Image (cartoon, rainbow, N blue to C red; front, top):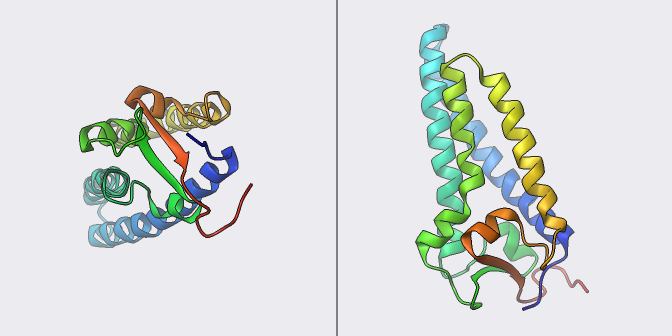
Length: 164
């Protein structure tokens, strides 16, 4: 298997992050506007928006990485695919397991209800930084969520850019 460069995975993640951020901001804005000036309604609606946003992120990754493309749009740009240990398309359950870092968003949702969101947000950011740092670990820049799901991100072609 040919593994991508760490920066290809990073930029692919940024592309997917921008796509998802636009949708998440729209959903959050709609729910925020629905609340009006009521702080209680705002907290409840933002809680629902956060649940929807987390489901959207996980669904986005499972749909693209578990589907025929085996890659999110960001990964497609760089010719990357997500595969199981045998180099084949992984079953949906395995792809779903690989999304566990994004489930951490639910902790901030609970924290928001308990009025300790800032503490949980700091912990989530630190956890995500730790997960990102696993990009640089062998073999092939395999991140911790790849290892736990027994999956790999591999280079299958040039994508939109020709890289070494």
